[in-house]
Length: 74
Length: 469
Figure (cartoon, each protein chain N blue to C red):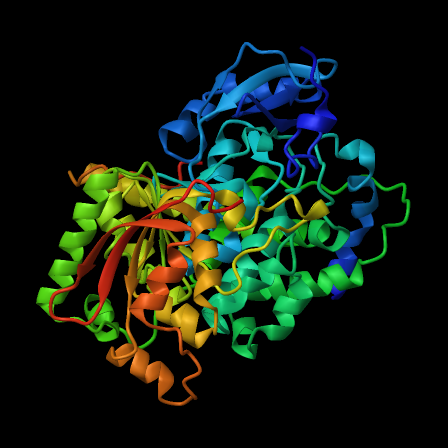
């Protein structure tokens, strides 16, 4: 769990009540921290996924294929 | 008239300070509080509301011009479209919970595109409306603040991912843990129950096993610190949602060893002619009584429920067997049957009232009565397998609905013979005469029809006015 500890330094401020004006649920310290780590891990892969989807859509359009709905609009 | 929140607020609507549900003259309204004003206005003005309602993902509402229940804090009062049958995740089959999970993630993705986020991800905020899972809490949205993680991540994992993983990898009946843990399955428990191979699945490894470890490690409140907060980028947020979606989509369950097409046939004791005759009688009864709502108790895969739902009658089809409900739901979803809602229910121990003050989640019978109840090939299971006396059965059905279409299965029937094969027959009163005599105390018997090619009878009964006194 060292990687969790590595990211923990910023957590206390992120979890202060002033930083959570909208929250009524307790997000849970461990859950809050872990999702930031996972987001860091999967964010890049998600970018590649979107980029790849756009490349595929571009070539489909270029070669006269049907312009399929791209689920990864973002 | 001024109404205070304390005496009219719905007993399940108190956690979120953004607003609350209240009832007035038999209708349910939702007060939107001033504290939620900016978020509500963003939801309505950004196009997100129209997008979600148009996609059958959010219950629609109208703004109501009535006195708020708590005028001091009120911004608006909205009148949401009514959901006919309220159901809970411990009554859903696997695919219902999975579809509810995917709907929640779809809503979150669309919310992010409109500059909002879900501030909660409770399975209880999802209900089935016209066969589709929809979000019923209009106040679940908050304006997205760049860099801020998802407050509802833990709740999503506990309410959706953990129970789905347990149902898919351990036993489909484990969604019954919802009846013990109101806020979803604790992740440490899920992690202990799941087999080792689930650690080889990236999504389950991260969102359940490592997540449970992180919760344990940081169980104590964080200490004050002066460092700047770490941010979660929007693309990281989207990646997180995408990762959860991949994990949910990767979970599957199907009834073992059953071909769907002959599932029903394998469990029935009818010739084709008897089955058709039984359908004819039930249709004739339904046409005679024209019920507004139907509960089919012991519905199996819904073959007779559909006689009601296809007449446009809102019909809830209950069965104890998660496999039968799964088949019923998948058929319903495939065909698109807006009036049918299959649910898992053990009638010998139906859903109790639960939560704070035992008033957050309604008991099974509190959600009725239905206008008509179907009890087909059911009574022998209750009377013989579960030893319920006929008088108790009559009282139960009288509480469940006004009209009763009930099939009496006599001892000579091979299905009852099977039930009696391994036990002593202590059921001296289990015969048509005693059945009719006991039920006549609570019901007026309008018709009795023998099912052709069988030894069974179908009764049409109507509850007496004094039945429940």
